[in-house]
Image (cartoon, rainbow, N blue to C red; front, side, top):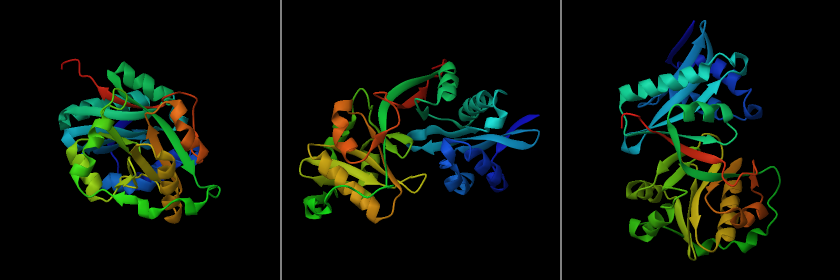
Length: 288
């Protein structure tokens, strides 16, 4: 018998077991399981087969009454039973019951099964990014003295950062900013939240933001950067991440491949050869 129900704390052992088979065991779910179980708004669900947890999925409530779908997992031992499809159908039905203005999700280009499921159910790609990753498996290979911290100024008011809203409003990005793998449209309210959290800075003509807000693992995100001093900014962010013992730094870029040289030169890697490999999808209700 297949059933879908809310996740409970006692489900963690099975979720950890399922996660251990994904991405070489480097899955974020075990780190945030308890948080998701207790979180208000949205819903964290598991799917069971004859009483055994075989997968899970999460709906997270974002600003502007947006429901964000994430954390979809199916145990590899239960593949071929259509559990992913059942979870997707359940979430669509449940989301309508909860009410939402938009229903969205993010996914990676190599999540072929998930892409097939969501596209068949009416989700449309609306924004595209290039996922780039830096891990601290080796020491940084640049002179730390070249970074002058005095040249970096925190942004403290919305007026100082309003031009960012224009930089974010492109055909590819569509105003989205990623908090780890959660993508949110950036308006004045969200930008002000970035500022109030002390995450937005300026170096010369370059505006950028970085931190661990909403991080699902022990890493850091370079949320965005716009200007001519990107190489210096990246070096600064990597130094701060290393000093604070973060395990990795990620960024979602909408630049062209030729503009990523400064990232590759500073130790970032791409996981694919695709120009864009991380996408935001939005559900298009046929009744809309």
